[in-house]
Amino acid sequence: KVHITIDGIKLYVPENYTILEAAKEVNITIPTLCFLKDVNEVGCCRMCVVEVKGARALQAACVHPVSEGMEVFTHTPKVMEARKVNLELILSNHNSMCQTCTRSWMDCELQSLANKLSVDNVRFEGEQKKQPLDIGVSIVRDPNKCILCRRCVSACKNIQTVGVIDCVNRGFETKIAAPFNLSLADTPCVNCGQCINYCPVGALHEKSDIDQVWEAIYDPDTHVVVQTAPAVRVALGEDFEMPIGTPVTGKMVTALRMLGFDKVFDTDTGADLTIMEEGAELIDRIRGGGTLPLITSCSPGWIKFCEHNFPDMLDHLSSCKSPHQMFGAVLKTYYAQKEGIDPDKIFVVSVMPCTAKKFEASRPEMNVDGRPDVDVVLTTRELGKMIYDVGIDFPDLGDSDFDDPFGNASGAGVIFGTTGGVMEAALRTVADILNDSSADNFEYEEVRGLEGIKIATVEIADLKVRAAVAHGLGNARKLMEAIRAGEEFHFVEIMACPGGCINGGGQPLQLSDVRNWIDVREERAKGLYKEDRATYIRKSHNNPAVKKLYKEFLGMAGGKKSHDLLHTHYHE
Ligand code: HC1
Ligand code: SF4
Image 1: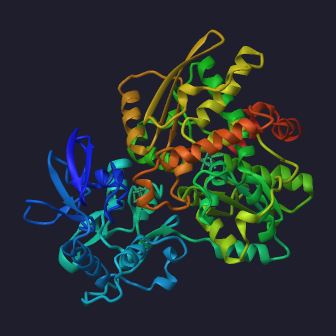
Image 2: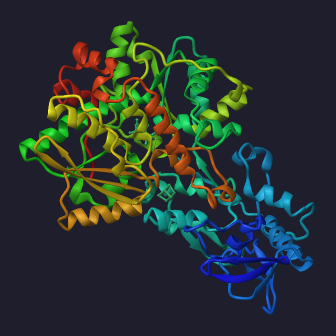
């Protein structure tokens, strides 16, 4: 540890601390813009400059390490003026059409910094960029809003190891772009949206599909059905300033009805269905000597990553469609028949924490008899925006239940939304099936938590099931390379986003000021485990609606009808 002084306050801090971290210990938050802990530690925006006694120039607190006897001053006139000038230079070159910016609703880090530094006038006139927007199925990039902080570049390159965007050119021509100026859609971008999660401004956002949903709702001839993903319920409240990870399932259902959806269903039902199908596939592959490990297929960012980077290993992927796609297919067949509704009049909206789900739903193979399983995917943020736009006071709403005939799903379906959840849900069911009994202990702690790759051996009947879980594509890449090199597993769960869906690219944005100090993923995961423990049915195979679905319609898990409706294939 070392002794230092910050603004006259003496403190004793670990020697691997930066000035930024040390200042936080004495309740001083030094402003940052480009800094993202463990992701983007490049010190390029110069917003966090401080004076260090004896140093010739101002120092960037986010990367400058502390040292014995160091004296730091965080708000001298020189520091305050430098921060202000740096920010004005960024603003001089920024498209400041704030009223129409996606970030005007959610906090914009640039706007709040301008406020914090009392910038009331931009003294410099810069080059106003007028570059075309890059609009994909999932992701929109607006280079005119970009402030070149490189946070997206680091997220894509360092966390996801996709690396399809980087800084090109110099001076006023500098921009973040894909190779050869390609549209992201024409690159191996996997649509995960992690770049959006880290963007401080409105330069990156999802492609909005809100208008299509309103159109369907306002059309009296259309039966508009909405389903909500597991991870949405522990994040939506954040759009309304509720604490991170607060479960708001009942309020969300109430709000969806108030918006005008005809039926409100839970994607967790689809998750239970996936466990039935994937569980059958796993047992089949283990017993029949099929390709192992079986790898989960619910994360569309992961699927695209696998198609681009591990095309030789596609036969490991489960053939199951993801839960919301399966559920969409069931809604346009079983539900349509049961309720006597023409499937062409059913419009399925999935509310997902994920931007890649927009791309997934648009894949041509995701249909039954030429009808798309899911018509529109909205992100959690888009749902928040719809609720906000019509003036619903979300935090004050009462609770409602999901609609019949699917009702409430199992707790196993709920935990799908966090890393390790699909694995745990599958183990709960596979163990009961293979043991032909109902286990009382079914919380698999060894696959929970935020370690990048989790490995466990679980004894089920006479089998030692070797399981591995990876989240974030950098970890997925490492695990896949180990498997390619011969490491043996039976079942592997991979989710594209770090932490799983709870930290998906469509979730409410948490600013760097929060993310640098609190693990948002941990808070949201807690919310899901809490909801799991509170459910009456905690194993997918005990979900009565799913049992009924097999009895009345699908027949057996992994059977012909399931294969026609609920399974898919992948592209090399
Ligand atoms: Fe997910 Fe899934 S868990 S992929 O993370 O398998 O997006 O929440 O809906 O489909 O159920 C996302 C979450 C989600 C699917 C399920
Ligand atoms: Fe990279 Fe994901 Fe953003 Fe695509 S969506 S640019 S893969 S971070």
